[in-house]
Structure formats: structure tokens, C-alpha cells
Length: 137
Image (cartoon, rainbow, N blue to C red; front, side):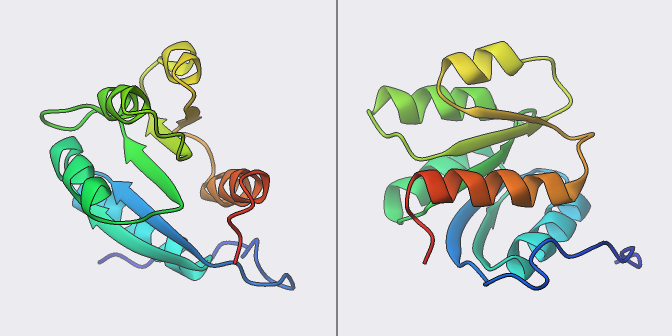
């Protein structure tokens, strides 16, 4: 793994949160780096490489939040969102993508984030969403 640049830790000086996150990303390098940050922020990460795996793990486990790529082989992140919402589940779902699907994601009750967004912004969104859902432990 390449050296990871030192970034400001948004949790420094704050009470550490803990949360269970289901994370789907088919780019293994990006999955490793983002998983590292999620863990650093207090996440217990279950990482998968496809939408199918995400749905399988989701149906077998309990999670506080889902973070998913959109463009994966097979089921896309937006279709994962449609499926989970179609089952009546309102778990927070963040769709990270370069695609221009913000309106679609938000209309389905998901949270759109561009992959061009700095990683620390992902932490901020996760923290805000979990506070709203009263899932911070």
C-alpha cells in the first residue's frame, strides 16, 4: 500500500464516536484507504466489493450507516438504495460517486457525495447523520 498522506484528524480533541458501517467499493485501493479512515473515526467496518455483497451482508447484519460506491459491477449503489428503501428501511445511505446522480439519490432518501469531496467531509456527514438518527454510541 502506498504511503497515505497525513491529513487533519477531524476527531482530534472530540469525544470518539462508534458506529457500524457497511461499505461497498470495488476499487480495492480506495476501499482500503477509506476503510482505514472509517476505522480511525470509530467505525466498525464491514467492507464488500459489490452491490450484491452489500445487500447480502445488510440482510444478515445490523448497521448504523451504509457508504457505497455507485459504479460497481452488477447492482449499482443507487439500485442498492432503491432496494433498501423499497423494503421500507430508512438506514442512512451515502452514495459516493463521480456520477451526476445527486437528484436521483436524494429523491430516494439517500445522501449524495462526490468522490472529489475531501475525505474529512465524509466524516462530517457521517457524524451529522448519526446524530440526527441518535445512533451515536
